Image (cartoon, rainbow, N blue to C red; front, side):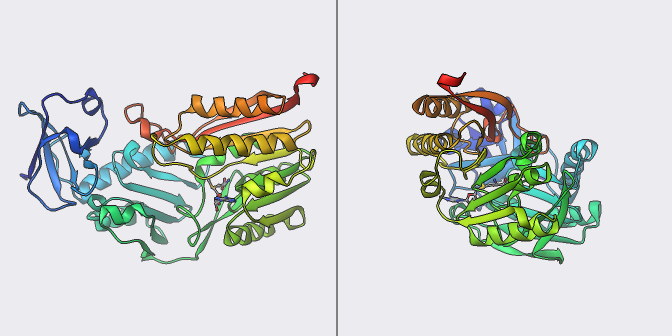
Length: 391
Ligand SMILES: C[S@@+](CC[C@H](N)C(=O)[O-])C[C@H]1O[C@@H](n2cnc3c(N)ncnc32)[C@H](O)[C@@H]1O
């Protein structure tokens, strides 16, 4: 099948040849003649075929490559890619809930598919990928025979791409709170909540942290539906306070606590994390989790986000006597060394020292591709906190 052609400039970065699938507006010499969202073939200036992907003139990422072969992008193509992603997950997954497709890392830019037991939740973030919605759904149906496939595509960036938000069952149906088990705990993925309903990326960090749960008084800041708190309570924490600005997330957290028989051990506070942390007294809690949302999108304007990380961690540290700080960042635009340096400065400011208990990142079903640094976003550290004078 012949497709409209795009030609790269003569001097382009090795990045593209080393496996990065994005072609920026300033890297294209001759643009293809086609509608936004169409498939195109990409060639070098000297006529060498680079790959096949989709085009959008409204995005600074003009082309996202789907393949580097001359192959049809059809249901068979999606079946091969999804099957390969499944082989990796199926072999190693310890749970029936995992990320089946992690966009660029799985060779499918603009697509996320999370699996919660027999239900699939998909997120499409680009116009080009939205053209293949039917192929994606029919592939999932054929491979997994699911009870339901829900699309939860939302966010301001959709408008820039030229697509509408979608929140609906594309196949079958199911509850808006999907039950699933993870680390032997019962959870609910909230289809009216955030992302695909649950943050599957923190499950290893929450599990490892639960090793330190025994008899702790826990504060789970930015709790969402209580992933960390539930892991800690099930592992022996005395009680947990969940703090989030979302009333609905806290309601769902109470429901999850009920299913797990720990309703009497959780307290919820709806409010602003910065204000709440500022109001704490020394020793109010023994273990504080700080897991804020992504604080900035662009690596050119990270100053405010760095200040926010400093403030959040400093407030949490000030409130800890001899306790544990578990802190995280999912801001892709902030590199790990810069984030860690910020935490270090927070320790210095309150004259405390952190002994690292463990460090964490993304689980294998959110694989970081070395060729695509943008796939690396999650940072996590747990520290035992001491006063400098008590080392
Ligand atoms: C990355 S999610 C937390 C995920 C959660 N720790 C988990 O493992 O499931 C960030 C959460 O912060 C909440 N949030 C965002 N800004 C907030 C603020 N200023 N104060 C309190 N909560 C906030 C959001 O509602 C969201 O639930």
